[in-house]
Image (cartoon, rainbow, N blue to C red; front, side):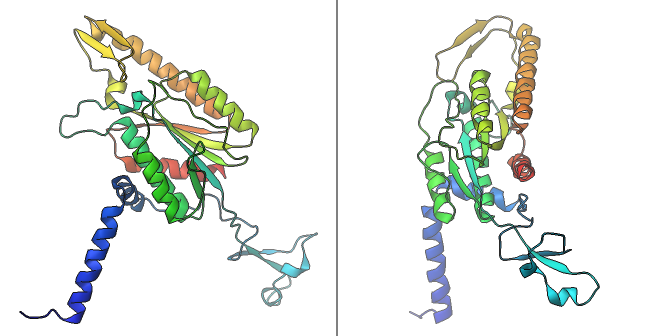
Length: 301
C-alpha cells in the first residue's frame, strides 16, 4: 500500500472537515447564503458622515466646524481649509416578521417542477436578507422574544434554526411588534390575507416609535391568476374554512377585484407609515425579490 503525499493527505483532511461542517448547517441557511451570493451587497445608506474610523471624503470647512478635524496637509495644497470626514458606521437593528400562518403553506400546481410554498419562499428571502445585513455589520433578529437582533455568524445559525421549525399557526397571521426597538427597521413577509386592520395597527405602533420598514406580499401564481373552472371546493389550509361552487369561473372577476383592492389598501397603509410595499410571486426567481428588499431597506436609512 502506498502512502498519500503529505499535501494530498492534508487536502483530503480539509475536504472531510469542510463536508462535515457543511452537513451541520441547516439546509435553509445553505440555500439562503447561495441566494445572497447572487446579490451584490449595498451600502444601505451607511456611507455618510458621522462617527466611524474609515475615511469617506474631504469637504470645505464651514462656520462652527471643530478645528480638530481639519486636514492641514490637504488644506496646504489650496487656499481653502478642508475637513477629513469619516464614514458613519453605526450598526442598526433589523426585525424580521415571517408569517407562519397556515395560509403560507399553499403551493399551487406547477407544470414542470414542484413550486415552493409561500412560507418556504418567505423564509428563504428572510434568511438571505439577514445574510446580507449581517455581512454589512447590521444586527438582525426576528420579531418576538426568541431571537432578538444580534450581529455575527452565530446569529445566522440561530435565525436558520428558528425559521426552519416555525410552529403551526392559524389560517392567517399578524406580527407581534411589542419588542421592536425604537428607530429600528422592520421587514414583513406575508401573503397579508388576514384582517388588514391587524397590519394597520402594527404599522401605527411602529411608526410611533420611529420604525421604518418594508412589506413584501408573497403570493402563489394561482392566487393571482385564479385558473379554476367548473365544480371546485375551496378550502383553507387549516381546513377551517370551506366553500364549494359549481361554476368557479364565475367567481374569477370578483376575486381578482378583491385581491386588487387588498393590494391597494396595503400599499396605502405602507405609504402612510413611510414604508415601502411590493409583491412577489413564488413562480418568479427569488433573486428579484431579494434585490428589491435589499434596495428598499437601503432607501429607508
